[in-house]
Image (cartoon, rainbow, N blue to C red; front, side, top):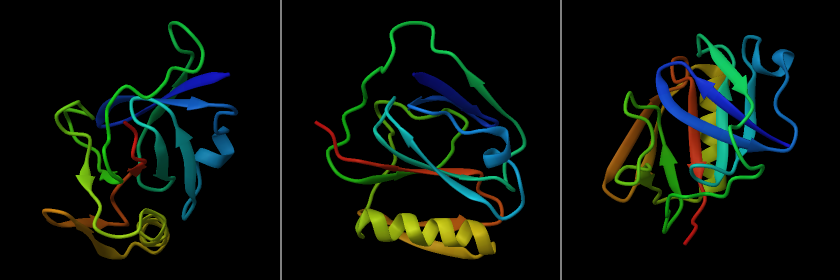
Length: 141
């Protein structure tokens, strides 16, 4: 089963394959939920339950299990934008281990800490108390 997760402030429709998160998982102070996504990129969406305002879980319009359609040549970190994820901007290429970056981001979301993530072109700064979600995108050709 595939479900689409839409989050306030970012128009991207994140396709989740398998069980979609429940309301109790998506709400509650201090919780960070790791949600595997398959479209428009493949990766892990880290969702801060205390930092987002609204969300929608909807059924996809067509076929089940839509594959990733944005080419990500190396591990990247995507932060929410008003434009959403696009072919020309799918995030920032990580200069550090993706699993370690994901753990640091998740911890910052839990503690409200401000952290920096090393990317190929500089640093991405995240306020863990305010960022609603971040996606660690897996390389896919």
